[in-house]
Image (cartoon, rainbow, N blue to C red; front, side):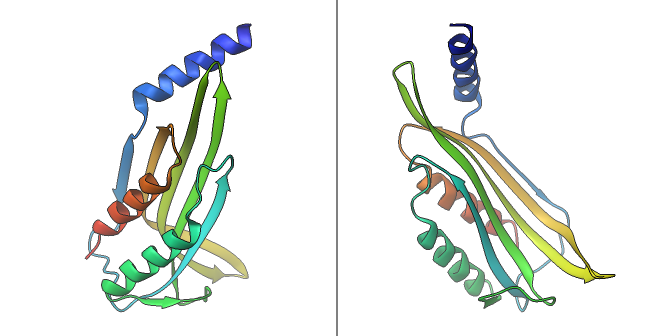
Length: 151
């Protein structure tokens, strides 16, 4: 019973902060145009909370191309990474059936230095979501917002 009360309290808190988004751009002068990019996605979603991975990848690649980027099919030492990380789960308890999740979107410069891969974030966008349906549209909107930060 105590566990159910705690879960309910967490859901109420998530409802109060659902769709909260934050973005940081660390290099205001950075331009996507002319740069090589690799789109990398991590799918940590379960319960049907994210079902349009291919569409999100294609959308991201096309939006990068429209901004003048050279989109690569794999990462190399001269590429920037457009990284989409989704963690979500469907929660069905106490007559509540929702997807709870987080999307993190990063533009990163990754290089090998002294035989170790190093990462520098040029931007970071993150959002929490709580939806009755899946998070597909929220993830699209997050990608759109992350790319809108750049020239």
